[in-house]
Image 1 (tube, one colour):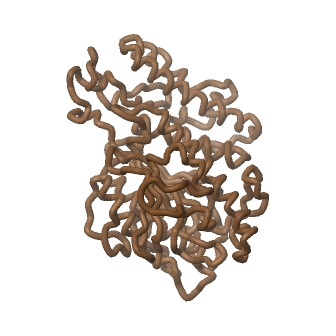
Image 2: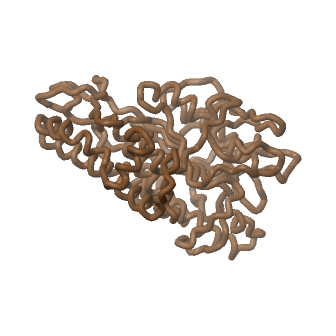
Image 3: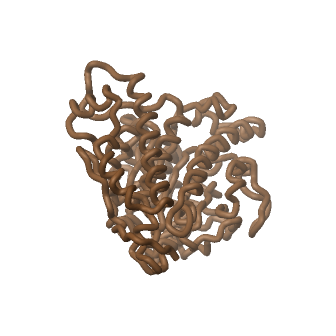
Length: 437
């Protein structure tokens, strides 16, 4: 229970030129002597679905025992600090990704990750994805019902006779409407916090090293002057986070700025770790301010040749997944898998450190991380490397390794996740029942 002297609306904004900035949940948004759970300020569960193509080295991903208190496997070891918020789900399978045209396994993988549908080769159709069903129910009162993020550029040549839409996104609003992924941090930032108007205004602000926060400085000061110390500190830290994200974007822009200013924002970090961390940090701020509650993120697209030298494996991502089932090469591929989990751990850590009502953002989040391919060399689609992280507002227990029977549809997990979000359906995709999580 919070006791405060001032009551602010949960939807309090700071507004300036081209800027509308939501605030994080503050104690001042809770009426005095009112339990948080009985107010409109009650934290809502945030959902993130993260996709990594090409599968994993499963013997270094899967815990050796089921149930509670499992020994953390090598690939997931970066998350050991958060084992109490981690659920490993094994033995799941995406049958809809299989087909007679084995060369198209990659073409189908991203499209079925959150849909459980069967992509059509001669038409762009797969099925509404779980994130969009959730967004329609839990995120319609936010400025952005959902946010679709990626790291790589959109593909224009995709192969296997399938449309590029199947490669370029994991989120589908309708069976025939894929949602475009944004991989430019500047564009994401301006979507979240405002763009300052025209191309000329954007360029002027960038050259003058001005912040969007400049236009709301006086409003912020006036607001903070009337808040208790704990809320002043929380708003100050929130604004500092936004300014730091701006600074990092500005650094990229200064390296790449030219005299010919495009109509769209520019600036993509060269290093994968800088790029993905920036995306994760913006997503954390979006969750904190409830600018959105639903997001997806693609680390890469299927067939990606990206390399991650800081993983210890300098080979191309897709090429490394074709390890010919040679143990040494599979161990080398596991280095990339573990490196990707390390990037995810930084996001988990950020959510755990961010207060949200009567807990943290991690307490009030449900994060799905994994792939819709298992052994990349075989192009198989089970058993899939999948984990859930977060408390889901008390709906997930963590510290568990769940092993349903082999070849249980992944759609059973997606159906159960919707249930944890209070979105109740009898079936989803090719589900055969609701997985107990």
